[in-house]
Amino acid sequence: MPADDYSFHPHPLNITIDPRIELLAVVQHLAGYGQRFPLLTDFDLAYITDIESAFRTFCGHPAVKLFDQMSSTFHADAPPAAMFHLSEPPMLAVRVPFTDYLVKRAGGKDRLAQFITVLRDFAQASRFMDFYLAHSAFYASILQPIVRELSVVDDVAILEQYFGMQQHSYTLILAPLFSGNGAYGARVCRDDGQYDLYSIAGTIGMDEKFHPKFDEPVHMRPLLWHEFAHSFVNSLTEQHLNTVNQYQALFRTVADPMTQYGYGSWEITVNEHIVRAVTIRLKALALGEAQSQASLEQELAWGFAYTGRIVERLMQYETQRDRFPAFRRV
Image (tube, rainbow, N blue to C red; front, side, top):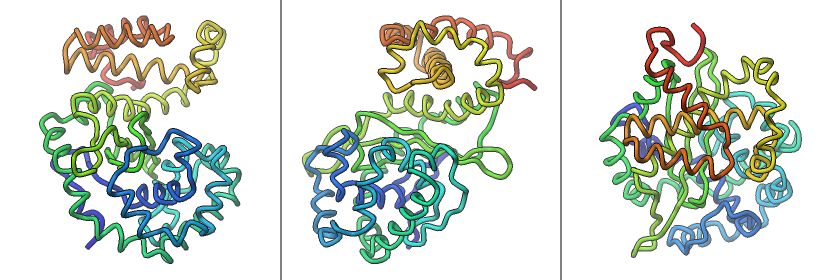
């Protein structure tokens, strides 16, 4: 049975558990990744017991050892983003060339290629897909309530209408082994210039069956808007980087809090400000002004000092869509 049988497609948002991410998470768990970075769940899930039982003889596998060596730079968003450039296990064929960003994070082209090679061997030797397919009922039990609740509103349509732009696909991935403290967004560029967009959500709790719990859809929706919005905003920033850099001096005002959050450049800071401002406005339009205002106040308190001004400009954009049919220049 193909892995896609565990996906649900009731609307343009695909919600799934991805075998590539599960394979990565198993290797990360065996490498002790969660002990060094708060990026894997610390809940005592029954699923983790299953993983340790199925893969305990592979703790010394080259994929586990190499990931451990690479993880000082190849961590957080980079490993899952790299997985989206590959086909499903066990083949893990490179479908889309890796970006310069991912190559750098992995320690170079050769190191990344080596990791994919040993990861492929891990998937084959451990019969990972047998494990994945054997957990189909478990995955379905996780997915079904999230799909049911997120299907009520078409969040993809909300995003595309706001930006006046479209991407090729939108996928929310539930990752039981990942921590719910943060979320990852990733994008893979297609030949036609559009993107396949991904948002990964981790575990925030555990139920009475020792199964993972994920964030409530009311909280998950703004997170989806944020992660998917990056792919609209970041690509435009890249196209107009010379203009963005004319205001480089403004970084000094917010450098301390931005660097603390890991946003160490002006370009990244601009992207974060715009995306957060867009999310605030989407909250106003879809969830009400009270939630929007509360979010704006929170962003300002966190040090995103330019968010208020951007929100004001977005409100102008919203009322002049006859002049500005899309976020980008047309």
